[in-house]
Length: 103
Image (cartoon, rainbow, N blue to C red; front, side, top):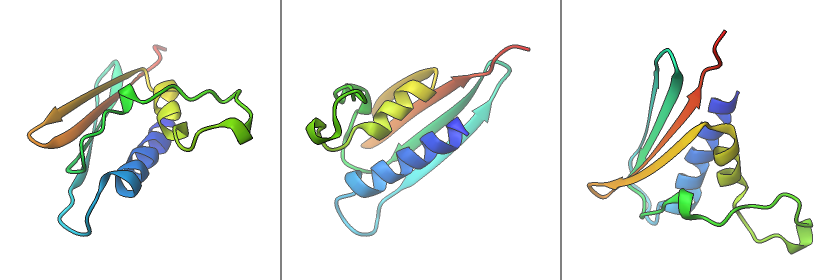
């Protein structure tokens, strides 16, 4: 469920906030798994944006005092074990890992 939620959040953030023009945009997801973790890589051709530099979202702040946005990034930070951002060849690359609990 966590992977589905973060994939949807990443997709919506790129589409709603990243793409500045209609058409010609690229967005891809790569999902891999090894014995220790599941890794989701989201790459897009949107404007440069490092979500790891976004201000922390405080869910305890009363709703009328909250700034717009930030909840999706908050979910990424709290649901995934590791996050890494790179800008490579004009593309955003967000790598998210979720550790698999040992049995």
